[in-house]
Image (spheres, helix red, strand yellow):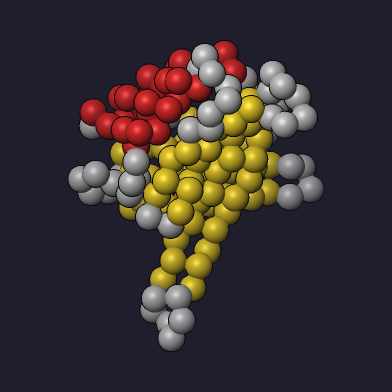
Length: 133
C-alpha cells in the first residue's frame, strides 16, 4: 500500500515483510535538487490495530492524530495541518539501528508531506488488508 503526497513527489509504501508479522516500509521524496530514500525490509509494528482504529476515527474527527509505532519509534502519523485547517499531513520515519559497534548506530529517513484526504478510506482499507496477510 502506497501513501502519496498531494504533488506526487513523495511517498511511503508499506508491504508484507520477509517473515511472519513483519513489514517492509519504504519512503522516497524527490525535491528536484535532492532525493531522499529509505527502506527497512524487516519492520515490526507495535500498535497496528490501535492505529487502524484511530485512522478510522480520524476520517471524521481531525482532532486526533493516528500514530503507527514501530520498533524504532513512530514511523507514520496522520494529522491536520496547523496552518491550513483542511489539509491532512503524513509524517513518516523509516529507520534501523545496529549494535554491531561499541555504540548503537542509528539510521533514519524522515519527512512530512500533504496528502489528498479523499484517499483516507483507501488507506484505511489498505491497512486492514495488510494485517490479514
